[in-house]
Length: 481
Image 1: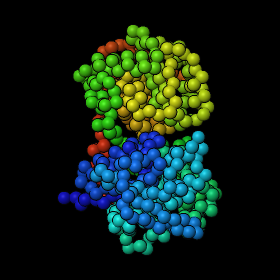
Image 2: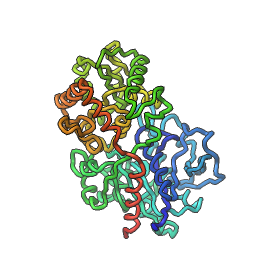
Image 3: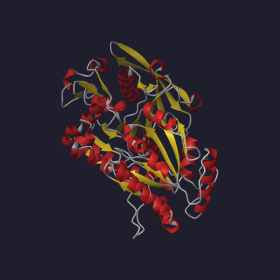
Image 4: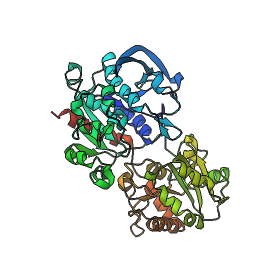
């Protein structure tokens, strides 16, 4: 029988405690799936202001953390319900509105905040006597943990058998800071070179993870190949090419309990593959609540997204009049870049277009349950979760064939009846509109559209399979010298 692993999962956000995007969904779901396989998994996060105080309790432990010239104190908390999940408390850094910034700007002391967090993670292991076999880190906010393990903690017997894995959820966010932050982190200057943490004259937290973790992974197989090329490597393609033997792609899963139209508590009408007609009730409800009027056989389009260049919003802006010229309704939910927010707020298509800025979990569920077509024309997409959520609700995706979108949305073939959506490749408006119009044509053929919906709803993107893949990756890391 395979040995039970001790795993510390380190993240800057995790559902339901703190969330800005898909990273939180993964960080909340994967540890739980790994526990179901019998592993001892502990999740550790910063104690942000948004973490509900009623769900956590003090552990009665304080950990000194060397930051710059002085020690600062981390106060440890844990969840009341079994998990377990630990929280690093330090109000001057984490008791703020926002996780990484506010009003569209990063906090100016993010380097100090996440240096503190990364070092506090390792000190917490010692304080609670938890010796992990694997420390699983995600994105730049945790990138210093592998660097610490290979440098100033390398001589500590406590971590002698610990290995690290670094997950790249989005290479576009690097955590680059002035070189002086190296002093604050107490990392040796011998690490500051092109094969170390130096990145075009900056100290890169992301690169620290890429260089010093024992294994690397991205959140889809296609994205793991795309980032080896300059157009998607964001300047990191050299180190990734060097480490390609240690780089793997593991497609994210979805929480099939939270995203299940058969018993979703956030929607009013439940449905399944056997009762698709009830989806129409969801459609009528969301259209009515957002003042959208739809004629017979008029589809409802939606986008639920961060408003950023990455998400392909330029194509939506360029083609907005063309989209609205079709016999459709359109709902957009999201927030982000001010220029996109301004554009969508200014659009006047009464009874055809509804824009809701911000994020609302219940509204997101209602929109997906009631929409017919989901638009995701991303410039790049490491994995994407919304297209998988959409398919579970019978909402057909129109996507750009990149990263996880290509891995999860095989194009529909009307002759064979196989495939789950419509895609395009060149990032140009004409190709996007061609894919959308193919979807609109298919929508007018009820039998074809029903097959598309059923194809998507039958997909297996559960976390159990994903957890098994990560377990194999962890064991591979433990065999590393």
